[in-house]
Image (cartoon, rainbow, N blue to C red; front, side):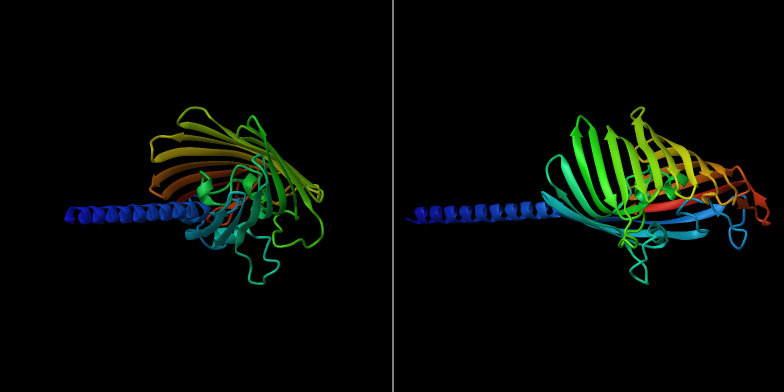
Length: 350
């Protein structure tokens, strides 16, 4: 009798153990599923910048005409916090930015709030089918090789092409997977970089045709038109070549054109060396280079190293901007055509 009782006790104990194990496994599986759906990510970056042939403070301080990474000494980039939910068919992205880089990124959207705006992106999406996705809201531009997030670029400072193309749009876009590595995107949007609401009742129209990582982008915005090619090729396991070219025709008879190459060579698992070579020319006095003269141009060469330490990237960078006309000041305040500078940046991704 004792043996039977003990046997029954063991069976009950075993059943209880299996039940608890199954419940714990189910809870962990549900928790894992939930973790995949909702996530918090982002970046934090800071940098040091010094001119090598010009003043580093005061009225004679000079910086390249491109966006971001232009403040002297030890300076702040931004804190970028992205909350996203990925459902089976629907989801959202809420992308918030704080700091000088974020303020520059949303320069045209302190319209509704007198204290400014911290929204970099804010959109919902619906996967209508395996081949069609609709996105509604505020999203970063589809034009260009570079992006606002410093973690998404190899070089820390940015190109002229990126700086004077659009940053963000608010509207409705449809992405189509056409099969065989082909894709198509069509969009109707508020005027470029006006992301909080539409102040004038005018709209911009965009399109993107993609094939195997190469993209042809078009945007038409109230008489302004831009065509842009963005792509790249893996020339070997360790050598990548990125390419960007664009032409912008403005409604006021000014515009720009240019091209940039991004060769990058991976020397080890934790270090990559890259060069950005860019030629940028204005049509009329567009104002990007800062000479105040028509048809100015600039050749900008940026050599960047990228060392990875876990989730932290350290980026030392040397940059030379050589303009066709006097666009910069030397330490004594005299005009000059070339500016050389050094940047050391730290970018943490989470």
